[in-house]
Image (cartoon, each protein chain N blue to C red):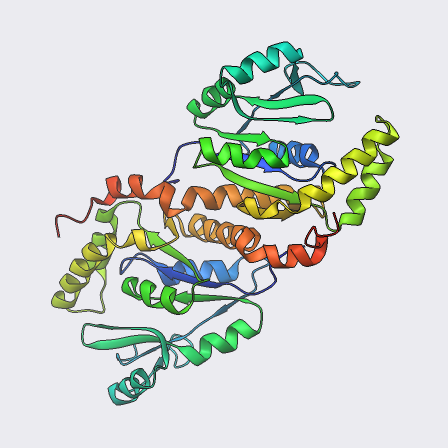
Length: 209
Length: 209
């Protein structure tokens, strides 16, 4: 019996290359999971194997900028010449279903989300050491040397933004990281600020004492 | 890999008769648990089956009041003619071991604990409905009718203090309640305020950017 029955908006972030997508997939594959994922919109090119509307909504720069002007993003970000953002209408649609909505966003999108959604649970995923992350970025085959260096510099800067998040989760193994995130979601449902309203409905407000 | 390796001080409370002790025992029996329990001190009589130093430290009123005067309690409480309290030195001993320390206290002890231990995680255990609790209190065989009525009145007043706690956990089944508490403990270790120091040790403070 959960006292808070509303879905949570859960923000997953962390430095480039930390494995956010892999952890998110593991989370969705766990037994008993009932999550919705918000697909981001981007102006970057589709990579091999990516699917429109599943990995991203791929749109033109003009379409993206028009949407920014209309206030159509929960958060957005410009990096390496491309935009990435979370369309607002998709978030609202998903939260109405009562399921947890998992957002995977760029590190500096956290503040934008917290401003618009005070209730969001924000989780910063980190590697066990920073060297592991840099090594992983260097081995990435799909990008030019220049892009790799830019990503490493970006990751260095991003490490410092962990303090903006509610939780820090180490991605030592994907299963451990996903399991920790599940515990966080479970715990957040029990937080007094989320459950007190239903609790008072249940026991009364004490005024009959 | 946990970023916070210090033990947590976890306070379990809830209205009289909600099953705090049973939930606490289930929590300790879970696979992988590594908890310490702080035994309270009381001036009430030992009930059949209770063991000195395991269920409570049973002391005289004079001993208890001397200890109050010395500031020797993390929290204490007077109810139905008896004192109940958490000896400070036992808490300090236990936290030094690095294990989670579970305290089971009276509802109105929460504020006293929070004042002395800002880091404490406080959990309020509630019944699925208040009627279930009142019925359970009425069936208690070891107390007089007058004591039962006093406990019911106390429970009514206690329901209103849930807002002082960090979490509200429904004791629908003992296993569910214990499992939620374990998730809360796991999540609390990942909270940024507890893990940021070790995190910065690990990745540096970003000053090398």
